[in-house]
Image 1 (cartoon, rainbow, N blue to C red):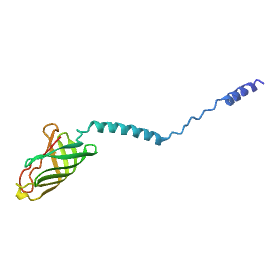
Image 2 (image 1 turned 90 degrees about the vertical axis):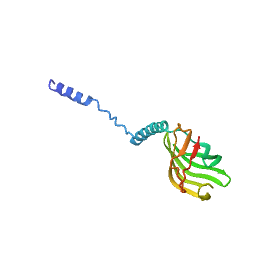
Image 3 (image 1 turned 45 degrees about the horizontal axis):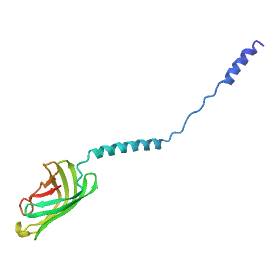
Image 4 (image 1 turned 60 degrees about the vertical axis):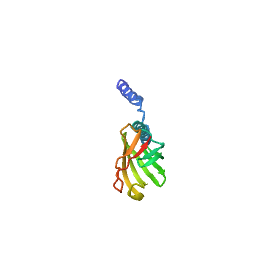
Length: 165
């Protein structure tokens, strides 16, 4: 009997041993990735908004030094710091039309891509002048006025085309 007691004790210890609980939870990694991406998107959007430049959307004044009076030019926002531009200044047979897109690249620069069409009677007897492509409007007064930087037209005269905000 004395030999039987240690065997019973050993068997009771082994049989009473608590089994390990399996706590292997299934983790949905797609949900974790989606939540991380949502947070990153929110952070990136807040940074992008804070880096935006002055909002130019609306109707503004368009002037040309050889056309008396003021015309109108409208800026329609198409994206952050991106605009669709359309405007005209006309007096008699003299006119200036601007059509295209523009993007603010800095607080002082407005990059224009489109067409500038003009006919000025004092320039080459009013011959139609069409300039296509990328042009730059710049400001020196904090964005109150933007002046066409590449101002020489096809007739060789310097134009003073200004957009007043």
